[in-house]
Amino acid sequence: MERRTTVQTLAWAFSDLEVTMRGVPREEAAVLLVHEPDYVRRVARYAVDLQLSGHSHGGQIVIPLLGTPYLPAMARRYPRGLYRIGPLTLYTNVGLGTVYLPARWNCPPEITLVTLRAAERTP
Image (cartoon, rainbow, N blue to C red; front, side, top):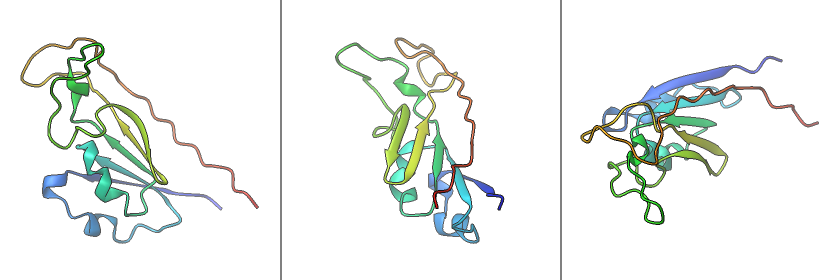
């Protein structure tokens, strides 16, 4: 049996997650594209397997031992990289650009290639 993947797009300020997820069969892999990564706290209550986000730019400036001096709202908890929230996987990409300050330091730009593969079913 072929496993299908459903991809949905969402921006938290204008979203209705209930409507977005309506009609997505639970047996399908669900990938949700959400601009703001911290929205995952709401998303984790739904049958979403993977959330792909951006928004944070990784903070653009990362000071050794201190971290990032500024992260935008809705990108403070999961600012960069791979996270597991229960059965859901979140990846926050730091992107290529900048916001406000046209600089990056200790936060190189990135393009991420995500390859989706069906898991082997256990008997």
